[in-house]
Amino acid sequence: MILSPEELGILLLSLKVAAWSVAVSLVPAIAIGWALARYSFPGKAAIDATLHLPLVLPPVVVGYVLLVLFAPRGPLGAPLREWFGIDFSFSWRGAVLAAAVMGFPLMTQAIRLSAQAVDRRLEQAARTLGAPPWRVFLTITLPLMAPGVLAGAVLSFARSLGEFGATITFVSNIPGETRTLPLAIYAYTQVPGGDGPALRLTLISIAVALAALAGAELLNRALSRRIGALQ
Image (cartoon, rainbow, N blue to C red; front, side, top):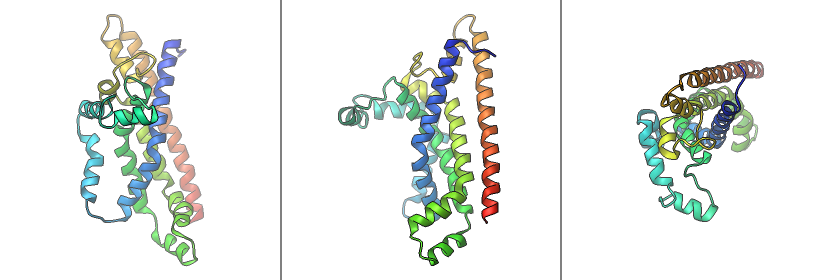
């Protein structure tokens, strides 16, 4: 299938939004997933429930909350715009924020499960040899968590590619700026004669999602073999 310039632009924008959403979520997801797996503290259940809210709330609700918080005069949008010059309104950055919020629970949960599965005797052995906690985490814990981190990143990436409700509510459907694959498919289905372009974009979406999952599976197998060899 040869892509038209418009389809190529939509695809590249979708990949850009999904990649950035994973990039900005990865470090916080690792920190929070690891902390939830290893520690008990007051308010842990409340934090856990709040993190998973985007999974159960209607995406439109999430998008509206983001709109209220990050609007140019919103409680978070105003200081971000004034102090750092960051404006999420009607821009691809807002699409990244919406996608990151919707994908964050999936990424965190996968990382949390991988942290729980790490053999803590290996960490204890490293500590008895004098390794500081940060070094144990970077050289023992994080590499053993790598398959779970990868799985979480892929889930978040795929979720970002399919994100619709929060994005269209938060940053609207602007061609070339916020119109990702799902929004473009929706736009084509609303106009006469749009069935053909919508079908082409649907096939592109399926192909990209399958490619991401296949690539992640291959990389996960390679990581698992490497970790198995080290253990």
